[in-house]
Picture 1 (cartoon, rainbow, N blue to C red):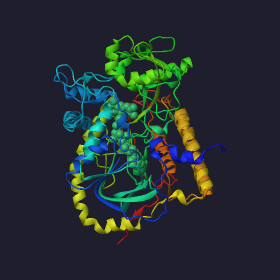
Picture 2 (picture 1 turned 180 degrees about the vertical axis):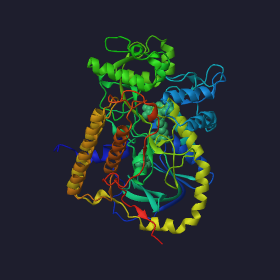
Picture 3 (picture 1 turned 90 degrees about the horizontal axis):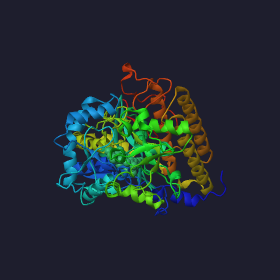
Picture 4 (picture 1 turned 45 degrees about the horizontal axis):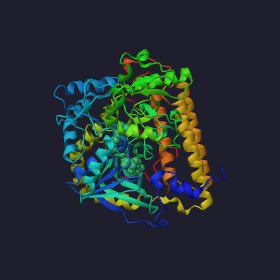
Length: 600
Ligand SMILES: Cc1cc2nc3c(=O)[nH]c(=O)nc-3n(C[C@H](O)[C@H](O)[C@H](O)COP(=O)(O)OP(=O)(O)OC[C@H]3O[C@@H](n4cnc5c(N)ncnc54)[C@H](O)[C@@H]3O)c2cc1C
């Protein structure tokens, strides 16, 4: 253990603004009264905010969110939202492009629903105040991205997510029915098992500022907690993206699917190729797909254009193809990055379309209007997640889900660019009607609500540990988190094999056992909570889900490429579904407070 490790500083600052400032109050671990709302929303990205605004017409809403409200994958989305808004385009074409990108694994009904309802969801965003770029004729400016056969990407320069988040948060803040609980980390869902049915009644959270456990009881819980990029060491996702939602839902026995399909964005900024080296960042800076759509060309370090060697669509090939091609070039040439060049385009055009990227590169001495940009693939998007139906319903009663945490069937084996903001908007709306109906019938379940509220074991903050014990726990957890990320990158990355996946499985299981032993030796109890430990538990769950799903798929399709089964197998054209099982008995997969209805 590094003796120079500054425990107090790390505990305060290890997770950026999530750990901003010292806790306002020391915990006395007393149990606070539960908070009751009609609707509980976990997450304040596009899915959570859009849902909250819609259900606020029907009752009280609590949004619990892990960090500052705007901190989310949504905030970093650059390219835009895809929707058929040009009369020359068609829904059929959008459907086709989505299914082709998804390597024919998409659920066709879901694709149809999303592509058809998309334009209306975009118009609503505009009505809520989102400002998107317009052409000179006053119409929306529609960009084109890889995999799309038309211009259909609605955008706000290269900061589309920031604009959507701004508009939705402004609307949420002025809505008297919505209460925002920031710096509240959802730890575990509160569920009751009745035979084969699991019912969700709310969620336990850790209030990071007050260092208190706060129990939220709700008529309906909407899981909108986003992605899991931090299961890998290099990711475009902000620090909040640790796969908490999938892990929470899995522990509560939700069905999870398609977790092998992790999208690696082909072009994250390769810091080591910049003239001035930035300090180590928590999330890699993304160079949007739209740059390839606008004519950006990929070169290796000898300035040889390589994409046409791999795919006739060149730089406009889907992401998985581009990421694999770059990976191949890097491995063959033993280089750390390739180049993406847009400097052949007029300077004004580059600066108008990519002001944010131009400014970021210039900070580190690179003028993108004159020089190529060093880029490398990074974990970007999780296509798999909590399985939902067409109304955002999950296999747990009372639990709905929307956005990146889900697997709705839209993306299949690979997500088409700019389809994820769209999916979040469509499913956040689709879940409204059924969840309002469910919340109303909750009045008849008073006894169950009371049972869960009063009898579910209460979690406690870890402040009770002695300082040196807590220091040990946090240091070791941080080390194990890095180890886990490297296992995932080395053995479960862009190109996989059965042997390497099995090695990953073994290493993850050893890592979990070692981590658990270390914590227990230092006085940790399973019902204790701290952000670091909760995230680690979730990362282990997500890593295991990715590996198990990857082992099940004995073919190469979309984002899942394995050297043992390099071909697409028609008979394997089925989603990978992971049902809850009795073997879920490890520390990270076990729910602390599983409760069952007493047999009558
Ligand atoms: C750099 C980047 C660029 C992208 N560009 C595009 C694009 O151009 N077009 C496109 O369609 N998609 C894009 N994506 C993907 C897209 O942004 C996301 O898929 C989408 O925004 C997800 O929205 P969401 O609401 O599901 O999740 P998020 O926006 O990630 O929000 C999740 C929320 O849940 C909170 N949360 C997480 N865990 C917990 C917990 N335990 N307790 C409480 N709260 C929690 C987070 O703090 C956050 O508020 C991009 C993603 C990235 C990272």
